[in-house]
Structures are given as structure tokens and as C-alpha cells.
Length: 297
Image (tube, rainbow, N blue to C red):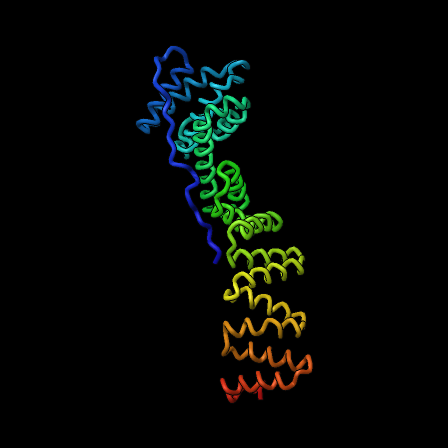
């Protein structure tokens, strides 16, 4: 069974504002948030929110980089600490944090405050990860996939997360999206199961040639992985491509040398291409395993 793998995507990072004397709502918010980062006291975080909201009432305020930075930090932290949304909000904290983060457009400012921006993205990623897990509990694979996609955009490069996205889109029936993520996986961190799943998806999409090509690439890289070998063998058996079966049988028999069905398939394929002596060799091998086998006799 394919299982989702959850790993923390949030970096162990805590930002501390330097303490200043409160003289206006923005500074009061910074002070309260600094206290929250030190103590974890959510009441300080809620106080920081109230103060920064007071600073965010005019068009000029809403375009101020410093105010948007603090606002994004406060609301991203609330999106995690208040995951059950016990406080009252005009908009969801994640939406508020995302909007404020999007207002940070000055390159020099963003470079100067890279740590704070990483803090915001990490907290938002953690909140969306929580949404993904909750969605999975209710079997809502589409919503879970959307949440994981946002996590992936906020904290890219986590291959376990990429696998979760591939699997969720596969479960939701989003074949093209699932293929996209499995392609990333086989390119970045090849694993035999990734090749097998990707081949299955190509097959579902009707791309038989790509499916077989993927199985072959996986088999060459992982010759001892039975699922890849036998999936390819089953395809050639279904299409009665006896020469391809003959080419592949030695690999399969290395994995299961005493398999009667496999030895019979080899013998039958050689018989079909006119190599009676080789066919007899495999039929005799079956009789050595089971002298009463009707088909081999």
C-alpha cells in the first residue's frame, strides 16, 4: 500500500525583535511579538495582532514595507498557534499573512529581512501542512493536494513532500499532475516504486510506449525489483510479443528460477518462434520441478 510520508517542513527558526519602547501601534506590535517569541505566550501574539491592525487602516499604511513585514509575521504565527481559529478574524490568518507577504516588493528590503521572510514562509508552510493532514483525515484528497502544493511552493526541495503530492494527485485521479511529480522524483531521487507508479499512470493515460519505456528504464536501474520486471513481462505476454518475452525471461528467471508459470511462458514463447529445442528445455525444467505438470507433459 502506498503511504503518505509526513516530515517537518518548517525550519527550527525563531526571530527576535529588538525591544523598543512602545510609542505607536507598530512599535507596540513589535514589542508584543518579541515577547511571544521568547515566551510562546499566545496572548502576546494576539496583542501584537491588535496593535498591528491599528497601524493598517489607510492605503499608505497598507503599502508600508515594515508594517506588512510585521503583519505577515504576526498572522503567519497565528495561523499555526491558533490552528483551530479560536480568536475572531475578519479574514483567515493565512490569507492575511499571504497578502502581507505579497506586498513585500522592494528587493533591498527583502534582502535585509531574509530571516523574517523565511520565518513567515515556514509558519505558513506549517499551517498548510496542518490543513493537508486534516483534509486527509476526511478523505478530501483534492484539498490535501492543494495544501501540499502550497507547502511545496513555500518550502521547495522536500522530496518526501513531492512524493505526497504525486500520491495525492494519483488518488484524486489527477493523472497529469501525478505524472509531473513522479517525473520529478525519478529525476531527483530514483526509486523502483516511482518508476512502477509512473508507468502505471502513463498506461492509464493511454501512453503505452511511455509506460513500457519507463518500466525498461526502471528495470535497467533496478534489475532485482520484481514488480518492474514482471509488469513489463505481463505486457508482452498480453500483446503476444514472444521475442520480447524471450529477451526478458532470463532476467525474470534470475528472480524466480523455480516458477512453473514463468518457465512455461518461456517454453511456450520459444515454441511460438520456432525454437523447439529451447522450448523443450524449459518444459523439461518444469517436469523436474513437478513431474505431473499437465501442460509441460
